[in-house]
Length: 164
Image (spheres, rainbow, N blue to C red):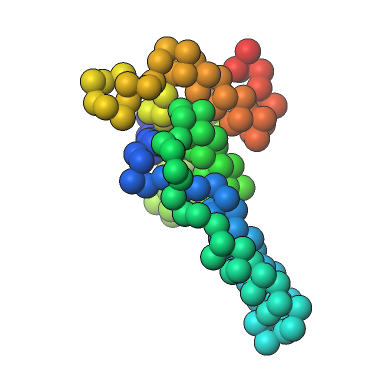
């Protein structure tokens, strides 16, 4: 059990790239609806209805597609957006569920186990495909540094010490 490891890997496939501005607006709509539900009100509340209409209007006016291909650093920032949101909720839930499932069969993970970690291919592809020719060693290095700083600043102080 101490070697159990799941490692989802982020890629930067252009067909799956959504603009961060669209993602942020969708997140704002979801947050508004979650808050309204937890407050016991719905879209029938005039303030909630008005704000939802504003957000949907803003989303409607936002271009979903980029006119130009994103640079490696843009793709890195997009992955950090997802990592940040994963770290704020779903990751903890998955790890808690795993611990409970293992506990139910009388198995426990060692305290230093890392059953879930994330990887990234963003900035690392230097194959001869047309889309990846723009990935230079400098872009790869910048992508790695940005990812390390971004994930460490969102994580525990232990991560910051390890990354130095």
